[in-house]
Image 1 (tube, rainbow, N blue to C red):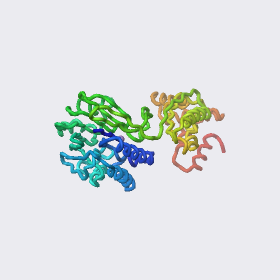
Image 2 (image 1 turned 90 degrees about the horizontal axis):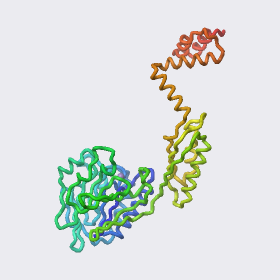
Image 3 (image 1 turned 60 degrees about the horizontal axis):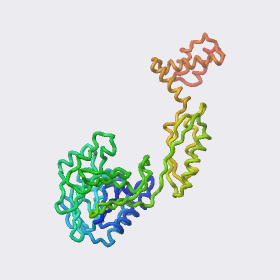
Length: 400
Ligand SMILES: [Mn+2]
């Protein structure tokens, strides 16, 4: 059988609402043409409580594909779940759809409506011409519970079938950021194919001697480096064990770094414009252009002087601009921060710093050095009425 793996559609994703919908629809429609069954490892929806119009959009997409001609059919669903259709569209909920254990989630609503089969903690068996494919599903969980849950459920393959273990988690070997993430070795043994969602870029590996596939999301959401690769889904053939990535029409993302030294606003503007124009010229409509600016700002300017907002507005409708200035430093601001840090580490209080500044100011304005700066500071920072403060300060400064 040919199995389409379509993941992380994030229908209802607010920032790129139309992209999420259009790309989910295209991926699923094409999956119907190319495969005998569809499996979905989570995050069909972007939220656990989508608005009715978001649910309606998803219902329309899944109703359309349910009504296609399917020669493969669900023959059994083992576990606590019930099937309300025999159309072989098999899914689990992802972390975005996760609700408290036992509570309905939006994916489950699609299953109750008979538009797909929710296979969370169950095994779905699909048959076509005597061939059986068994899919065990484990819906998205908080990372620290996964290992314990796998041990508790002890998923096992169905004899005589091609067995798939489908889940929705981070995996340590791919994202080595947390000890809580499970390792490839923690996955249950004996399956012919491991399918994971959650990670939005495409990954292929080998687990317990079998292929491990993450197809990646059908829509850009995280805008991370590495998400520039085309979006789409994977078709796996159980007979040849070969897999094909099917690209869908998706919004392009380009990421570039702009290095500047002693940058003035005009330089930043010019550098960004060049990158944006070049990205637009590549021909994809309304691409996401991410620019990481690194280097230093010229003295006399700060990050707030950089004309980022006007740039974003000017290109609205032609490109989605994201400018990361966190690695652009203002030497002047850094110096001042250092000064403050030094004063602080030297034990100076804000009051002492204020006193020093006031003394400097008085000196530069030509006031006599005899003035009791500390006393004047107290008068100026007192809570009494402004007029009264000025009167008292003026008296101290010898004005009449
Ligand atoms: Mn996701």
